Length: 243
Image (cartoon, rainbow, N blue to C red; front, side, top):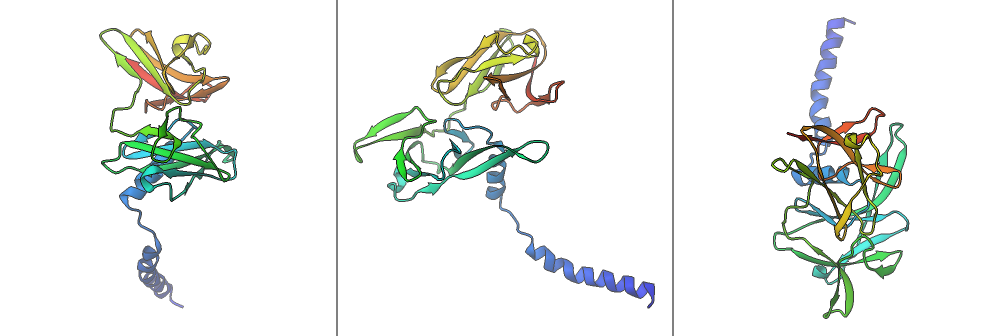
């Protein structure tokens, strides 16, 4: 059979098939894409926190089922947490946690909720904020979801200082280490200034610095600072430039 004829036939089949295949490809909305991006940012179990208009709840993966119910729904609906896995370089599961993402309305500020763990109602162990609700007679977990600027690591150029910020569980011992300590993480311990909010301020001369936070022997990047780098031993760290 003529090769040109076969080639033309193949091209014609592809042109006919392409629209069919294209219809089968799901088109994600902006909200779905935004949600997917937020999921990739969830790295650790910590107190509830805001990312834009989304309120993030996390839990340890130690139970078969974890759910959450809110006061604005009269606790009638229990929303299940989902599993989020992180993977190492060999595509093996390195760690797992549970999460739930709540899309906030413009008027939602004070969020009250309860957690269900394997069928038992409880308070959120990651959240130290609690209150007694007279209408239900229950102690509830609470989050202030007002649109305030979250705390973040910042440079004070006039004073020549850097205020490092870590947000996580309350009651931890968080240390700071970096190129300015020759990666000795036992020199500086951060202070918990509010429940789950740790800070440490240090004078640094102009320069580029790598750093990370430490709990035990585990190192963590600064989630309030988007600048990333890799150390000489291949570990991910945060990067800051003092001018």
